[in-house]
Amino acid sequence: MKLTGLRLDARLGIREIDNDHAALSRMIAEIGKLLHNQNYFDDIRDKAVRLFRFADEHFTREDTMMDALPYTKYAGHIDTHKKLHMSFLSQIAGMSNCAPNSRDVVLKYTQILSDILDEMVSTDRDMVNILIAEGVLQTSH
Image 1 (tube, one colour):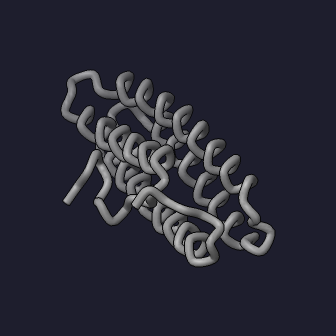
Image 2: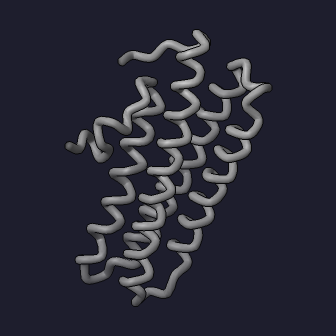
């Protein structure tokens, strides 16, 4: 079952982050839908710029939240998290620069972005579960 673009089991229980993840998922899906438009490339480029900006703001929010928690023993998670963020932003930049008649390329980028988003949510869920188990974090579940 999907809920605002993400599976119910993809929810972390942190409203702001869940809302951001759902918005990222919707934005990726919107780009995929644009492939059916006649003059899709300019629209895709515009949406990709919006996606890049929103993703960058989201990653800043997550980083701020992580910095506020006792994360020193979770350096491996933080490193993985930052690598996923950089990969996501890099893929958006690649998509916005692809050739105007590359529907297949744009479609591939939307799949890659969806896969990275799934991996980011999974990584976040792992960390949230650890923090809940240690009594450091409470969620709205």
